[in-house]
Length: 197
Image 1 (cartoon, rainbow, N blue to C red):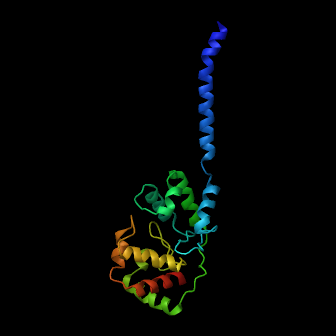
Image 2 (image 1 turned 90 degrees about the vertical axis):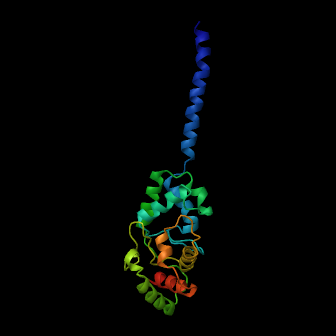
């Protein structure tokens, strides 16, 4: 009788053991925060300051801005093809931790050449467009407003062109309205101004 009871329990125990093993493996496969940060660093720079063309620096970005951007990407509202594999499995806790991490990193200027004459012209355009009313006089951003100071010039130009042509998915339309009517040379000047701050 005991043998038959053992043989009946045996498949249940094996199934339970397999389930525990599966869960353990699933948990083990979930990247840790340092592993996620290493993934981010591949493109956005190990210290959050990008060295790659058209890739934004994340260092010093307000946590709420980064959190909001990652959630919009994860949910498919903001479509950035290169980011899709990295954001799809992020938990809310992962996003919060990443946002807080990048906010604490010091923003550095990129190695791009900033043209002082263009930066001066950009300052005039920015005053007319009241850029500092949202992004602050220091351009460090706050809440959902991104830091523009020391951002990559090429990325700023790329992003503003997308806003201007309304081709930036999931973007805040307030920014499209703010730069409406600017010429391409104005956008370039604004990018040099922001990078120089």
